[in-house]
Amino acid sequence: MLRDGAFLRFWGGSSISTLGNQVTVLALPWLVLQLTNSPFQLGVVGALEFVPFLLFGLVVGVYADRWDRRIILLAADLVRFAVLASVPLAALLQVLTLAQLYLVAFIAGTARVWFEVAHYSLIPNLVGPARVVEANSSLEVTEGVSTLVGPSLGGVLIRLFGAANALLADAFSFLLAAGAWLSLGRLPPIERPLERGWRAQLLAGLRWVVEQRVILENTLSAIV
Image (cartoon, rainbow, N blue to C red; front, top):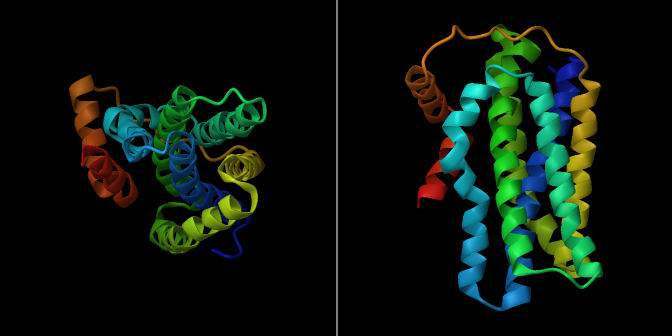
């Protein structure tokens, strides 16, 4: 896999986005706590980051099979860049509100749903069916490291620059990841599923969610 330039770029973009997710999950609730000093509001914004998995996970799975997954990854990271960068800008202008943070959490969470679904669905088209297991293993190692390092990095950024500026650094990580998706170029054509009714498509989406550990964990987190 280390000799596959396309996979290395994909792996790099995935690593940056995954690390950015961990910083967001810490910095955004921290900023809410600073703004309101309310553990309840902290819990609300934390829930808004994961509720999109429950609301949209199955539907997104249906459309991710039909659209260019590279473009989905690109759009998801650009959306996260834009909404997260709006927070330090609003803080600088002294117009930051709790409502904006709620909206940012929900939009960033929704973009993450699209990202996660397209991310795992793209791997067979990128490396071929024979190397899917090897590619997934590499990505899971990165995910594990990011889960450990991300909160610590977020804590350091918050301590040094404040929660709002930590989100600015986080926003630029998603912009950097977007560059990785652009560098992939055109990938082999995606095998389109046969046209089926919505019920069959949603059932297929449910089976896919159950098979994908990251998507399933985040969906269960939203339910809890």
